[in-house]
Length: 247
Image (cartoon, rainbow, N blue to C red; front, side):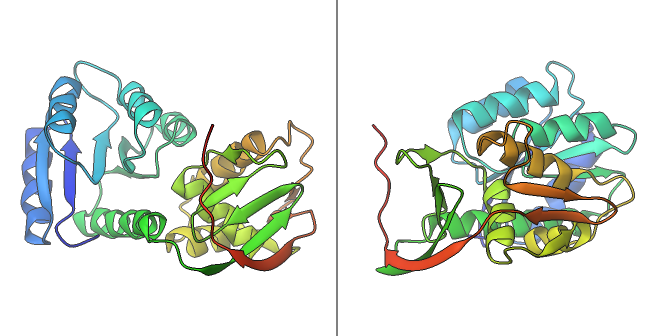
């Protein structure tokens, strides 16, 4: 999916838009540019967009509001561009469904690496079903890696973003192991943590909420000065692939 993917860059800074447009086109991507939320919506309506690079500071709408709106109606991957001082906004952005973020100023090569990593994760979600695959059962849930689905005890799908499923898979494939934030970032995103990187904490919080930990931390255990641990038994099994049909 990497080759020829259509990237939408939304940033009100003309020089940044021009630089990223030229650079990403040179890497083989198709690129659309938007200077505000209104133009971004027009681009999204006019063509299929494979990934959005979204600045938080836009002249007509909050980047967080646009991220929230996009996630409510679409699974298009979103990478946020934020000023380094906007730590709170970065965390909120991840909570409303962004797949990754990058602080300004940044090296375009690092953004390229983030884009390719997110597109790889997205491509895995779109691979066709295979006849047999491994599933994981834990705490009343069943995780199906081939279809990237999590099913609860009543047979209903738990809606997870790509980043959330990647993190859950890291725990399921290493049951009982303590995993540091650096290890989890390396496993799921192929990068190390920055000094103020809270993305793993945010993703764990989102998984706890969606899997019904309700503050009890029944599934995920926080280890002081360490990281996190999956605190429930995991059963791996081979079973036929089957998509879940939502009622």
